[in-house]
Image: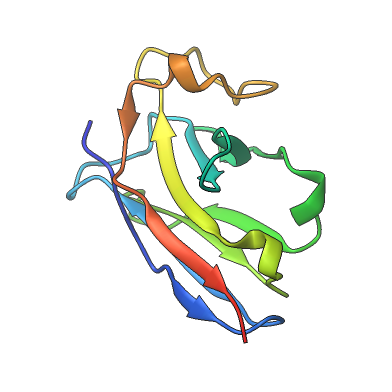
Length: 127
């Protein structure tokens, strides 16, 4: 499964971005989609997940209350809305999945277990 992220960019603190994850017209309806982010020099960390049943999990305490993950009606796009962006949100954001994952978002994503990734989209929060 080849995933593609989009929607990143440069935004001022307090602004919002909506990141999208697609699979070239393939339905994502049967996959748990996980958003992760990576700051240079640090490990990738899970941000949020949406299950194939549209149940959601937020992994990062620092973004709770500021993000929303959703799947569009066509089931081909999973979006991550981030509001009230802060400089510490600056990172490359990835969407990923484990195509052999059992239904349901993991309690905590394990990077090594995710077998399909996008190329990442850069989010920079700065004045």
